Image (cartoon, rainbow over all chains, first blue to last red; front, top):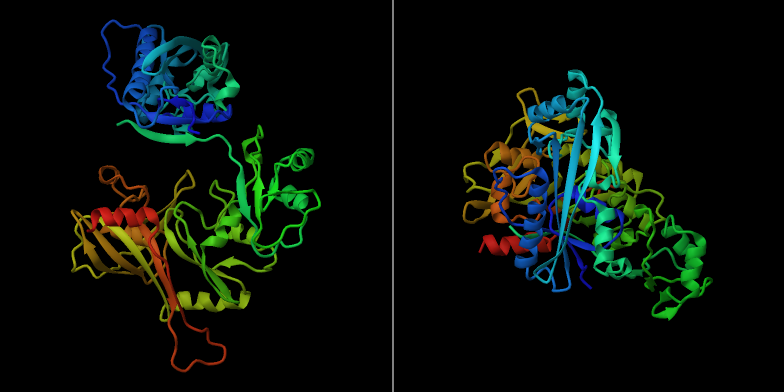
Length: 200
Length: 319
C-alpha cells in the first residue's frame, strides 16, 4: 500500500522529522513561484507559501497521490522585529544575519496547510522563539565555517552545534524551529478525525 | 518540477534465503544474532505467534535451518531506527560473479561502499564476512568508488593477496576496463591522459583529487565506443590506480563523467536526468602466460554487464 501522507517539500529537515515519528510518507517537490507581496506580514507570507506548496502537489501530482492522500504543505519564516530573515545562501549573508541577531530574540513561525482530494482541509501556524547569546565576530565566523547553516533561515542549526549560540528558547514545540510543527500536525489529524495508527 | 523526492514505506515482512554455511543453526539463534537490538522476548513472541515461517511452515524456536531455506521474518518496529534487522548482507551472495579457492569477484552495485567507515558502517567487505562466517580471511584487493558499479576483487588467501598486489603495481598482466559515459563528444585524438594527480582531504573529511604539476604520475587510456547527442561512451583503462583517476582525467579534458557529483557538471546532469554516476568496472583480468612457473598465478577474465540504470540510459541516448 502506498503511504497516505504526502509531504509537499524538498526539505531534508522536514523529511527527517517525519522519519522520527515513523510514519510512512512520500516527499514530493512542489512547483510554484515565491513572489513576495508588498506589505505582507511574515505570518501571512508563511501561510500563503504553505498553502501554495500543498495546493501545487495536491492538484498536479496526479500519478503520485490518491484522493485519500493527505498533502502537507509547510513554510517557515524567521523574523527579527519586522525584518524577515530568509535562507542566507552565502557565507557573508549568514555572518550578517548572526551579527544582527546577537543578543536578541528571533521569532520562527511555521505554517502548515493540509489538502485532501484537491481541497484545503486544515491550516494553522505555530510560533517558536529563540534568544541568541551575545556573539563575537570570532564566534560567528567559527560557527558559520563549521556548521555551514546556509540553507537555514536565521543561519542557525539549533538541533546541533547551533545550541552554542542560544541563551533561551520559548515555545510549545521545538520542531516548529526545526521546520515542521509535529505536535500541531498531530492536533490537525485529531481535528480531522484521522487516527494516527491508520497512517502507519 | 513536481517529482517524487523520497518515499518511506510501511515496514514489510522480509523473505530471506539462507546461504551456505548456516545449515543446522537453530532459528531462534539465527534471529537473535541477526535482528540486532531486538529483545529476545520479542523474538520468541514472534516465533510463538507463528509470524516466523520456514519455507511457508510455522517455525518453532528449536527448528533448524538449512541451505536454501526461505525464512519469513515479520516487520519489526523499534523506536531506535538502527535496531531494525538488517539481512542485506545475505544479498551480497547474489552479486558474486566469479569464485575459486583463492579469490572471488563481486559485481558491486552502485551506491554501496567497498568497506564501512566514511559515515557508513557497512560495505561490501563487511557484508561478505557476515555472509561467509566460515572463511577466515577476506580482504579487498583494490577499491571502487561508492557510486561506481562493477568488478571488485576480494582475496580469500593472504598469499594470493600479496601476489595479486604485485601484479597491480606491475600492470603488465593485470587489466581493468571501465565503461564510462561522459558529457561532450570525445575527441578521438585523445588516446590517453597522463595529467599528474594530487590527493587532498578537505576539512569535512571528503577526499578529492586534482591535477597538479607536483602530483603523482598517472595514466589512463581511452577509446570511444559510441557517440550520442553531445555525449560519449568510452572504454577507459586505468594504467595507474590513483583516487578518482578516471573521473578527474575525464573532467580535466573537458568531458566530465555524467552523474559525477564531485567533478561533474550538475546542470548538464540534470538535463539528462542521470540517475547515477555513469562509471562501471566492466572487466577485470589477469593475462595468461605462455610458460608459467609453479608459483605463478593462473590467468582469468571476468566481465560484468551494465546494470539496469546504466543500460536504460545507454539505450535512450546511444541508439
